[in-house]
Image (tube, rainbow, N blue to C red; front, top):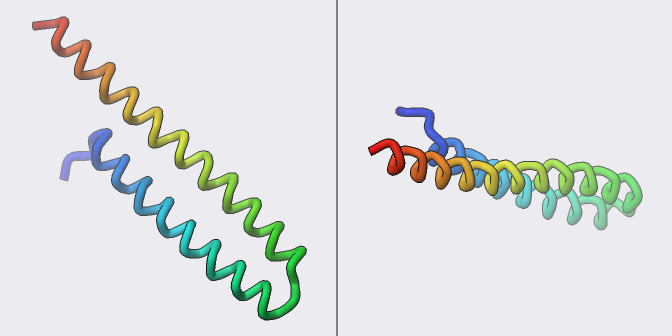
Length: 75
């Protein structure tokens, strides 16, 4: 399998979905065990990681568009 921008983007989307599921599981476990402060701290860390992955997805899309434009200019 070629490791191009599209495949990396799909990997990042899968990781983002996984982080979202983990956040909801963590929130429900924190509510049930009455440890909201620790839960919110862990969720904020996961949200920062999710935000970074979202920025990576956007940058990969920009990189892909620029690569397509530069290939068209070379022809």
